[in-house]
Each structure stands twice: as structure tokens, then as C-alpha cells.
Image (cartoon, rainbow, N blue to C red; front, side, top):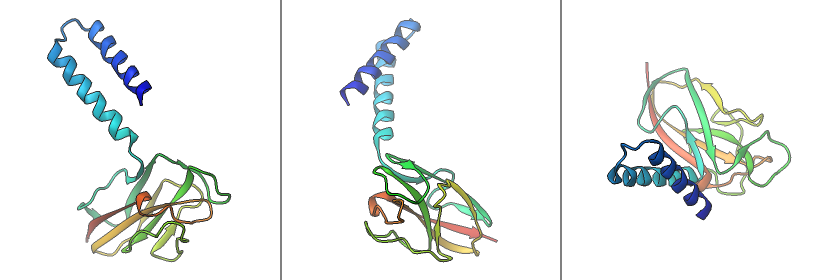
Amino acid sequence: MRLKLVITSAVILSMTACNPSNNKANTDSEANNQEEVIQSNEESGVYFVNIKDGDKVTSPLFIEMGVKGMEVEAAGDIHEGKGHHHIIIDGTFEEAGTMVGKDETHIHYGKGQTSDTLKLSPGLHTLTMQFANGAHQSYGKEWSKTISITVTE
């Protein structure tokens, strides 16, 4: 953490030196903004890249999946800090260590995919993204994200 703060300070000082019109208020604001970016970049977990909770969408729905703090890889061997995505339609996260099911509502992305197109019926749905290791064993609630969407006709 200390290294990142030193780098951030250097970046702010460089920006200030290159732009003499900056005043102290702008520098302080830039420092606060930089610190907020660092904090949000340090958060870990999975997230939907292109949709958010409460969105109204049409079917078929293109989804993009992201992860911070781990690396996406194909299923197979178990490697620390690596895994792959699953989408659970109208369900919830899997407890840590449990196998993620595989059926029409539990979709596996064991080839390391980070996007897909889902066909959903009109109405309210939940989508739960679950990250799991190479053996499809869930990393638990901390590595899941559930959103609600409404599919319009």
C-alpha cells in the first residue's frame, strides 16, 4: 500500500509541475480522486461489466463478466488465485467449497469465457455470477454478485 501512495504522490507532483495553472485546491482534489481510484481498484470480487441491478433489458441478452483480485482460467487443475465464471439464473450464490451445479439455470464458463448471450423469458429475473476454482468448487458469497433485471418483450 505504501508503494502505491508514493507512486500516486509522484504522479500528482508530476501533473502539477507540468501544468503551472494548477493551484493547491486542484492538487488536493486530484489527490483525493487518485486515492478513491486506488481504493476501488483494490476491491476484489466479480462484477457484471455491461449491466447493473435494476436494468430493463431485452432477450437475447449479451453479458460481460469481470473479476478483480483473481485471474480467469479454464477449468481443470486447481490453481490458487485462479478460476472461472458461472451464471446462476433465478438462484443464489453457492457456499464456498460446494460444487456449482450444471443445468439450464447453472451455466458454466469452464473454457475461461468472459461473455455470453442468454435467452431469458420476459419478466423479472436474478442473475448470480459465481466464481469457482478449476474443479467448479465455489469460492463462496464473497466471489459472487447477484443482480435483478427485467426482461421486456
